[in-house]
Image (cartoon, rainbow, N blue to C red; front, side, top):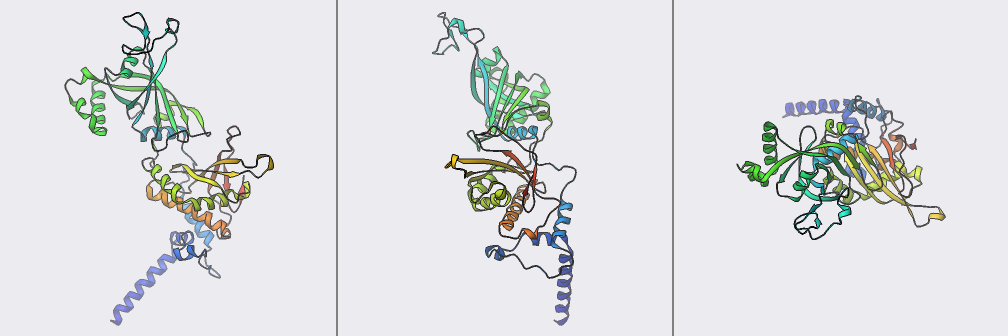
Length: 399
């Protein structure tokens, strides 16, 4: 029994030495205080004369985990569009209604249309027509669509192949949500091998539409189309960013790895972390904006590089009493989050740092070589859209 006790003691001693010598262990102990300490707003006491300072351990860990080859703060426009369009599987196909002369000599949009069009409007006065369609992207980022030959949008395409596909994530509806419009010309898929691959791809993704794809009479009732993209229009939200995006950049871009679950995380965080959001706003932007409390703080966008943080606060000048300013900032993760667990961990680190700053423990972090990156994305909506150079945050906000 005495021998077993001695062996166990030696093993435990070796384990302790390994842990204390590990920078990663010390780094995590520094930024993840136990529940007992957090609940009491007290961090573990600092050793009187540590051999290696906590700040140095944290810096070493940051240098090890940061990839110097890709020091980016946000997705490119091409990646933003590819992420949105690649996540969704349906959109609004916008075609133009051809005006035709009916049997009674009147000009209508279709054989059963109840409206008539004056003859002077017939030429150069096409009307837009939107319908819901399912789609999938091929390797070049071109949407594949299965359309019925007798559908209204198919008849419109036969007269004018110039179309647009509008896409918006249904989990982020309204003007606050990002949306993309793909503008181009639609054409039939005529290459036999491409058509075969497209059918298999489509049937695998949409099992409810597999039956007509496998029917011998497929070409009689249905046709596979693809949209050749000429230009792309992107809107990131209400009063934020609107711009045209290069189709070549969109074609080469890859969707963000967090795309399939980012909205789920945002909904959960925005519902449960309002108190932490208050700390985040005061810690990083309180001195610059003279903040005490903010209203409606929320995260509007999440990807592997970081997140967009938006809030509003009351104006303090007499002239605008009762009115609010709106701010949106891009806050970057120190380490890229490539999975759901890594995104949750990176977010926790940012919130933990904010809590320590407003709790008076900012001296524990010191003036770091690698502070969190912050980019001002939008100011109040009464002013024209503005952007500024990237800013960093250490103990206090600075440009």
